[in-house]
Image (tube, rainbow over all chains, first blue to last red; front, side):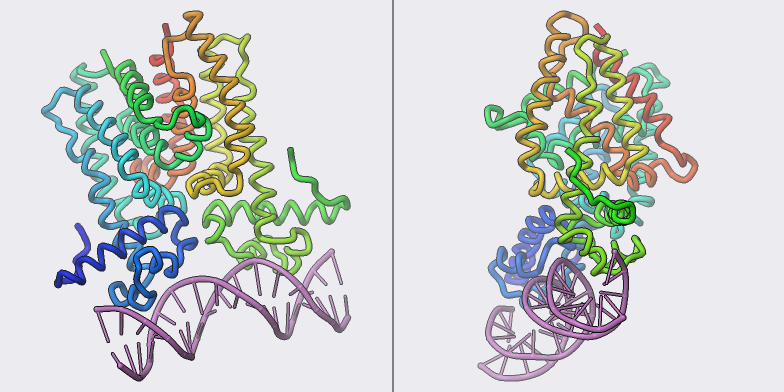
Length: 204
Length: 204
DNA sequence: GTCTATATAGTGATAGAC
DNA sequence: GTCTATCACTATATAGAC
């Protein structure tokens, strides 16, 4: 659930300004690398004013992560057992890739956290996340059993989708360095590549 | 090239001890998150003694990254234009997956760096790395043109291999949280899954 | 609600004894 | 080569005026 946030309009707006600035800084520098000075500067507020809205640096970070997880897992939640199996999976891949393109900072915030052992979202990992994947892996398994898609390890399929799509946000500088300045936008080719890949993988 | 390191046997051993400890800490905490105190504790040395062997925190980090990059790209360098195309690519995937399993700290050190914009290895990214990928993408392109493997975007194929294999090291806690305690070792299934995936993708 | 000033703790690096 | 002690600086958080 989204974290509860203040009531009045000014408080609302300032909280959002702070969170927007914090997303920028945390996603680029990690939790320890980020400083309240940087966030305050970017938000156009004084440092003590930041701590009027949030009790601590940690609280800002937690608020971001909590809100993010909800958005982040929505495409997987939307995987519809009643839909066309291949189309459902391709839509999932496509939505995750679009999220990498449109929300790269969120992706990197999440990656930073998991990379360092997910100390602040361990409960969500082994709880809600594991349960959701368990459920959707069951859906995929049923599709395989029914012969609607080719045999595949459901959970490793999900890992593959995460890995392939998030790579374009998390390793953005590497992708751009390798493609060179002639290829300013990796996403059209990536979308084509991934679609072809999953069709070949899953078509019966 | 590997960074030059001291001459005598004691210096040799202490340098290695420091680097081993630093790899542990940096890979888990990132550059800013790591402290010299943590590294010194783990290495069993005093903090000033650390700085007798390396001039600064930055120098320790750079030494690790430089040594790492050499090892990290070796499997791609070994991709043999004269070998059997599908077997060459499957071997590359397999070696990268083995590296995730056997060198997860190195993978996370690298991921931390790239995730935060690769500030210390930008030159390598746009230089050596880009050149190597350019060369090997040419090899893959030739295989496609000759009809030895199915049509594929060479550079995005390489990104896919990186993403899929490194995911198991970099997002290890998430993988284990999702698989649950019943499945303590993800790698056998991952290897099977990836092999099947790339065969379906590339077989003509 | 927002600011200046400051308390408090840590953090990379150095001095200098041994 | 290694240690204790410490400097200089940074960073989170708080106090208290306005």
